[in-house]
Figure 1 (spheres, rainbow, N blue to C red):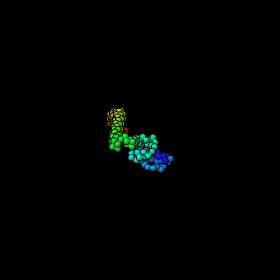
Figure 2 (tube, rainbow, N blue to C red):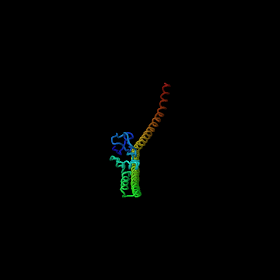
Figure 3 (cartoon, rainbow, N blue to C red):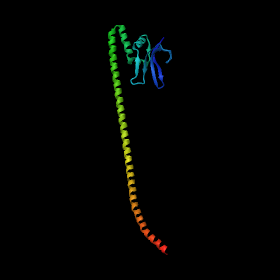
Figure 4 (spheres, rainbow, N blue to C red):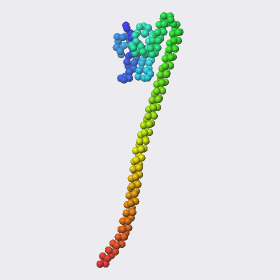
Length: 200
């Protein structure tokens, strides 16, 4: 029975999540499988990969053929490296201890590169966040300056209107005073005219 190590899709639309499985090559993609050996989440950066390396090596030694994506994942997690070292042990080129030491050294270097990538990604994220905040502050300051500039002419117009109404009020006030004085002057003359009419 030809066995393949491949991915089986799970998750919802737009958010895929994969199981890494060993399955009969004739079975459907999401059908029956022989063993689940890990899972893979490509939606994060860096991608989350959990893999049972010993099970993967066992299937590789039994003749299972990985698909291209599965091969890349197995290489990334060190399953292919461990299988290669196990072949060297079988041939007598290496001892178990030497193979284990080489594999652990490879894992340490890989972990260092992954940590460096995570650090660089977090720095880039913080830098992008700071730039975005600075841009938002510049926009808000510009908006405030524009609002202040627009409010200044409106205030000037309002003060001009107040001054104009005050001037018209002062101009009208002497006119009314003159009218009242004229009325006072006319009142005694009107009284005299009324008295003359009564005598007549």
